[in-house]
Length: 308
Image (cartoon, rainbow, N blue to C red; front, side):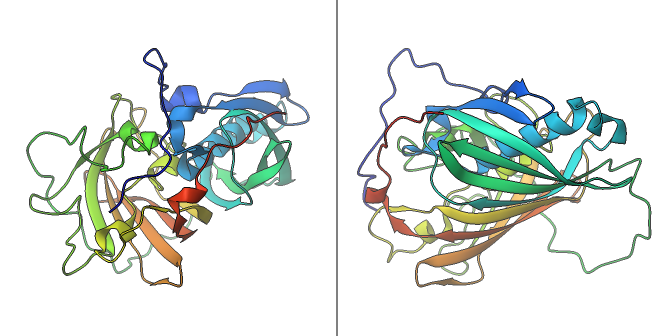
């Protein structure tokens, strides 16, 4: 793998941010659903804000709107159980405006659209909200379960070498990884290069929440980098992703989760990915689906600073 051609440079006194800090929003007009945010440089791939981070930002803005708006908060539907995000164009570090708009309210489920602007519309998420313990009632049926997570390996967490291109992908340093001994970052490159399995935790010790599952569902070493024929450094922009949450956390969040990433078809520069997230008891927490493309890393360059 060749080196990333355009690396971001961080000053010695640069203040790195936590996920909570990176997704923080300021209310501009609550009734109109208008919020502002700042997209940090350290949550980027190269010079472009990371798609999973942006998903968490939109989930946070939507949840804030659902729980603080005078009318919507009375519905008691704080959990974003399904989100479908479309990335229309790349964002830039700097200020952004978010607009939350109600598509439909209901006693059990409410549909919200959250859009992000930097001069123009860049991405939007359609999100379904409910209360997972109070509003969801109905049959529970037995299904064919996916392969269970392997035993959680002993030993230290990988806190430095999980991403060979970590200097160019600073957002990858926000997670610690633990993989099966002898694997290549959680993959068997010879027999199953299109699968990656790993236990993960947040590097700063914070817990995973429903909101942070957007980031986690998209933050892993790209599967194409398991293939020896991929010589040139690549960038893997996300076209669209969805996250369906199956379980609400207890005690403020999950400290550790297991993640399985699998691609079924990688063809003509486009790939699908399915991401399954499990808790330590082997129960599915969330399922995510992605459509992404592969382009030269040369295309990941600085753009004019974002303005509102």
